[in-house]
Image (cartoon, rainbow, N blue to C red; front, side, top):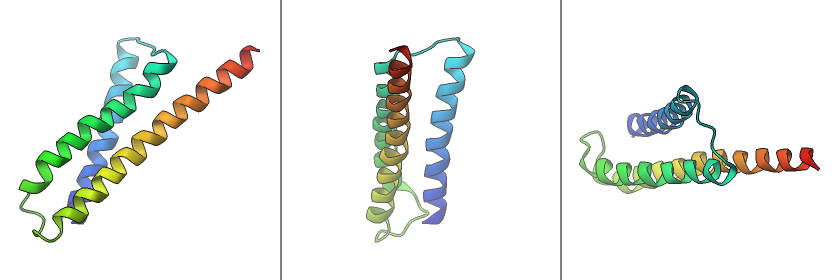
Length: 99
Protein backbone atom coordinates (compact mmCIF):
# COMPACT_ATOMS: atom_id res chain seq x y z
CA UNK A 1 0.00 0.00 0.00
CA UNK A 2 2.89 2.37 0.69
CA UNK A 3 4.04 2.06 -2.91
CA UNK A 4 0.61 3.11 -4.17
CA UNK A 5 0.46 6.07 -1.75
CA UNK A 6 4.01 7.16 -2.62
CA UNK A 7 3.16 6.91 -6.32
CA UNK A 8 0.04 8.99 -5.73
CA UNK A 9 2.04 11.68 -3.96
CA UNK A 10 4.51 11.73 -6.84
CA UNK A 11 1.66 12.13 -9.34
CA UNK A 12 0.16 15.02 -7.34
CA UNK A 13 3.53 16.74 -7.02
CA UNK A 14 4.41 16.23 -10.68
CA UNK A 15 1.07 17.56 -11.88
CA UNK A 16 1.38 20.71 -9.78
CA UNK A 17 5.02 21.24 -10.73
CA UNK A 18 4.49 20.54 -14.42
CA UNK A 19 1.54 22.90 -14.58
CA UNK A 20 3.48 25.69 -12.86
CA UNK A 21 6.53 25.11 -15.08
CA UNK A 22 4.47 25.05 -18.26
CA UNK A 23 2.76 28.32 -17.36
CA UNK A 24 6.10 29.95 -16.60
CA UNK A 25 7.60 28.65 -19.85
CA UNK A 26 4.67 30.00 -21.84
CA UNK A 27 4.90 33.24 -19.84
CA UNK A 28 1.27 32.97 -18.77
CA UNK A 29 0.19 34.64 -15.55
CA UNK A 30 -3.18 33.52 -14.22
CA UNK A 31 -5.56 36.06 -12.77
CA UNK A 32 -6.67 35.50 -9.19
CA UNK A 33 -9.79 33.41 -9.79
CA UNK A 34 -7.98 31.16 -12.29
CA UNK A 35 -5.07 30.70 -9.87
CA UNK A 36 -7.58 29.52 -7.27
CA UNK A 37 -9.56 27.30 -9.65
CA UNK A 38 -6.58 25.62 -11.37
CA UNK A 39 -5.46 23.42 -8.44
CA UNK A 40 -9.06 22.48 -7.70
CA UNK A 41 -9.63 21.42 -11.31
CA UNK A 42 -6.39 19.49 -11.13
CA UNK A 43 -7.73 17.74 -8.02
CA UNK A 44 -10.81 16.68 -10.00
CA UNK A 45 -8.61 15.19 -12.75
CA UNK A 46 -6.35 13.46 -10.25
CA UNK A 47 -9.37 12.07 -8.39
CA UNK A 48 -10.73 10.62 -11.62
CA UNK A 49 -7.33 9.10 -12.39
CA UNK A 50 -7.09 7.50 -8.95
CA UNK A 51 -10.68 6.23 -9.07
CA UNK A 52 -9.99 4.54 -12.40
CA UNK A 53 -6.54 3.14 -11.64
CA UNK A 54 -6.46 2.05 -8.00
CA UNK A 55 -9.05 -0.68 -8.40
CA UNK A 56 -7.06 -2.39 -11.13
CA UNK A 57 -3.65 -2.37 -9.49
CA UNK A 58 -2.06 -5.68 -8.53
CA UNK A 59 -0.09 -3.93 -5.75
CA UNK A 60 -3.06 -3.88 -3.38
CA UNK A 61 -5.06 -6.58 -1.73
CA UNK A 62 -8.80 -6.34 -2.24
CA UNK A 63 -9.26 -5.34 1.41
CA UNK A 64 -6.70 -2.50 1.12
CA UNK A 65 -8.25 -0.82 -1.91
CA UNK A 66 -10.93 1.26 -0.14
CA UNK A 67 -8.43 2.60 2.41
CA UNK A 68 -5.79 3.38 -0.23
CA UNK A 69 -8.35 5.09 -2.45
CA UNK A 70 -9.68 7.14 0.47
CA UNK A 71 -6.18 8.22 1.47
CA UNK A 72 -5.25 9.14 -2.11
CA UNK A 73 -8.38 11.23 -2.52
CA UNK A 74 -7.80 12.95 0.82
CA UNK A 75 -4.20 13.71 -0.15
CA UNK A 76 -5.28 14.98 -3.56
CA UNK A 77 -7.86 17.39 -2.20
CA UNK A 78 -5.75 18.36 0.80
CA UNK A 79 -2.62 19.23 -1.15
CA UNK A 80 -4.41 20.92 -4.05
CA UNK A 81 -6.68 22.70 -1.59
CA UNK A 82 -3.67 24.09 0.24
CA UNK A 83 -2.30 25.39 -3.06
CA UNK A 84 -5.64 27.10 -3.73
CA UNK A 85 -5.64 28.62 -0.22
CA UNK A 86 -2.12 29.88 -0.85
CA UNK A 87 -3.39 31.61 -4.01
CA UNK A 88 -6.23 33.19 -2.04
CA UNK A 89 -3.84 34.50 0.60
CA UNK A 90 -1.42 35.82 -2.02
CA UNK A 91 -4.31 37.66 -3.67
CA UNK A 92 -5.34 39.19 -0.37
CA UNK A 93 -1.81 40.39 0.30
CA UNK A 94 -1.72 41.96 -3.15
CA UNK A 95 -5.06 43.68 -2.56
CA UNK A 96 -3.98 44.89 0.91
CA UNK A 97 -0.71 46.25 -0.48
CA UNK A 98 -2.59 48.19 -3.15
CA UNK A 99 -4.69 50.09 -0.62
